[in-house]
Amino acid sequence: MNYDDVIIGGGHNGLVCAFYLAQAGRRVRVLERRHIVGGAAVTEEFHPGFRTSIASYTVSLLSPDVIRDMRLTERGLCIVERPFAGFVPYSDDRYLVLGGDPEKAQAQVRKFSEKDAEALPEYENMLSEVADVLRDIANKTPPNSGGGLRALLATAAQGYNLARLPVETQRNVLDLFTKSARSVLDSWFESDQVKGALGFDSVIGFYGSPDTPGSAYVLLHHFFGEVNGKRGAWGHAIGGMGAITAKMAQACVDVGVEISLNSPVCKVLVDNKRVSGVALESGEVVLGRTVVANVGPKLLYERLIEPQALSKPFRRAMSGFQTGCGSFRMNVALKELPQFTCLPGDGDHHRAAVFIAPSLDYMDRAYRDAREFGWSREPVIDMMLPSAVDPSLAPAGSHVAAIFCQQFASHLPDGRSWDDAREDAADTVIETINRYAPNFRDSIIARQILSPLDLERIFGLVDGDIMHGAMSLDQLWAARPLLGHADYRGPIRNLFMCGAGTHPGGGVTGLPGRNAAREVVRGW
Image 1 (cartoon, rainbow, N blue to C red):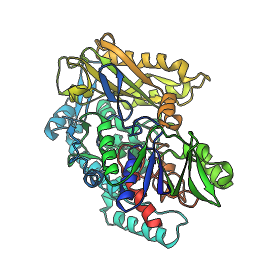
Image 2 (cartoon, rainbow, N blue to C red):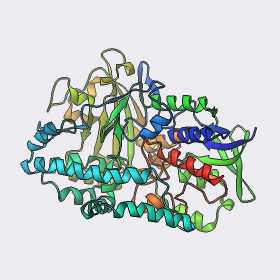
Image 3 (spheres, rainbow, N blue to C red):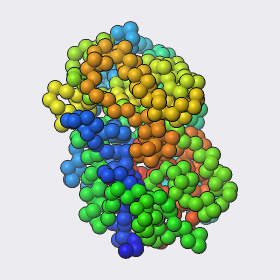
Image 4 (spheres, rainbow, N blue to C red):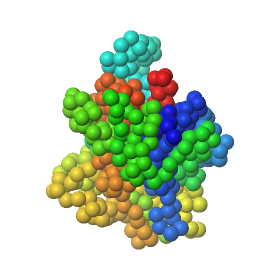
């Protein structure tokens, strides 16, 4: 059977793209290499009785338009808002709670600085205003360099919306899109603890320092989402992230999408300078009028397409596309909840994200460590305890910790493989958490380790890059993945891209898939 659209990869963006294409009356087939749909947004058992979102682990950026159009809530998706955004323990028995009730948040910051407490509401309003700009841009196809009149009009339209903003907002947009997180935060706050807590998101999924230009944008990127209509909030999908993609798959099937599991693609077929379909590792050939790739640009152009099908300038440009976000994931089965020295007992802090990174200097050292040694001796850690919100994930009385760690090099400087270093790196993570919660190490029943190499092997994330490509200034908006291909179209006729390597980038948003579907339909 010939299809209108063949989609490589059944991750969330591939499913979103497939849904909109099928809704437009097209014959669509999704090819997923694993035994389960969802890509990196899946829920799996990693130890008998213990389930978790093994890769992507929290909800905020998922587009409300996608939720509405795919009727995910009506299909049973339940997202529970976390009581506050983050809990930051310190080694001196103090702590800071972020988000939640504005007055309580100010009171938390006041423990460290009266001046910073007064500045907090204005800073959050500023972030919210700029996030509105990002939301508007994220839902649109970027202007494509060399795209003629249409690209010119798109540039003018998106530029006009920005030009209409007050000049102060324009300055803030420029700062957050170009400066380092430290530079921005230094202009607002004085406390090292407050700046560290507010700057934590600037290095999540970003192999760099909070001193790196562009890290302020990474901070902003994690702020533009919402949960149940509340902007800037974070949540947990009951049943884990796999509940989201399972409901997406239901929506796809309901509009006629064919989903094939255990169907790894080994080659994109090119005939007379246009794609004609794909070949599977099984030997099956699937023909389609278009091929839409929900895999990273590096994987698509350097492993799935024969070099002679691409121009030499394009191959050279793609060789410079940067991957590697410095991420290291662990899932841990626990006998009990961590007991933090600074805040013992059970409480709402167990239902928030636990940020272990007490200052911007700590984050900077972690990055410099990774550059020199391969991973940080004191890693940046974002720990969720999803079973504290969703008891279905663990046996009664037990818990699951989803640990996301930052500043781990994709390739170790001494030439060792991550297969040889993963246990040592995991021990470093455990010991770091144990310094803040002394019962943590002894409460471990089992652990699952996902090094950058594991993330590549299991999920096809080249260099373990959860964003499908660095979220650096030269790889955003009209330059994502490359100038001339920001409109979701590849360099070969009828080839499209719909993954996180396209605008607006990484995170479980569904926006690359939604935007790409619009361009595929427009292309025909």
